[in-house]
Length: 52
Image (cartoon, rainbow, N blue to C red):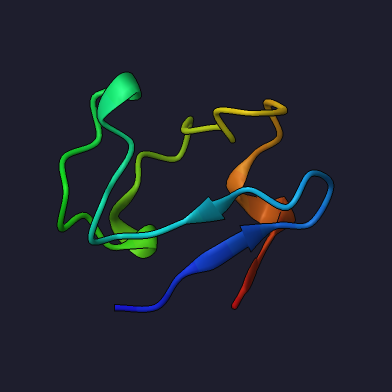
């Protein structure tokens, strides 16, 4: 699975890790994140992430 980088802050969403602090289980592909998911660091939406 591909990793995605938050353009404003540089946070990397790694699907193998997920985002457990925000209820996203490991193994969740970026494409499968809820539409209202935001960067856990700076709070921007998925549209501001780029494929790593």
